[in-house]
Length: 149
Image 1 (tube, rainbow, N blue to C red):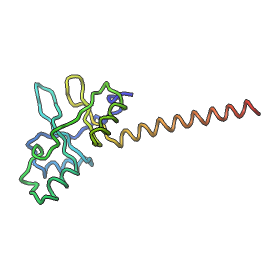
Image 2 (image 1 turned 90 degrees about the vertical axis):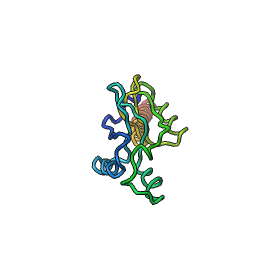
Image 3 (image 1 turned 90 degrees about the horizontal axis):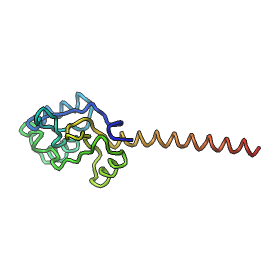
Image 4 (image 1 turned 45 degrees about the vertical axis):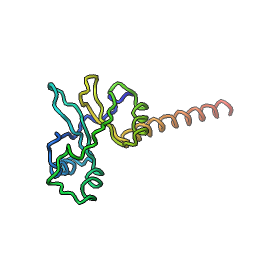
């Protein structure tokens, strides 16, 4: 199971100069808790940061800073962790766990943004796999009971 198979390819993006008011509107309009901040480099869309709804609360509202006077680039998480589309979901879980993050952009071999994975996405995938495993165990138990009857 690779990141590319399971990532959400509909990523809400913005450039660094977007105002926080506009960024918050994007989050509202698309019903998301994050916006990936990108730069255009040689016709590539490269992720350079991320702003979450939590960032808006902690870095702006709680500090009584004016959202209208700030840009996405000023509050984005700059030490952005990314994962590659051909890497496994297990590697992504390790990146998230190690870095205490809940969202991670997915890039291709050219570091172009292709999607995003969230902790919720991963829980859903794992839940489906566990459900399938439980069904297999139940089926095996029923088969064994039939053999011993």
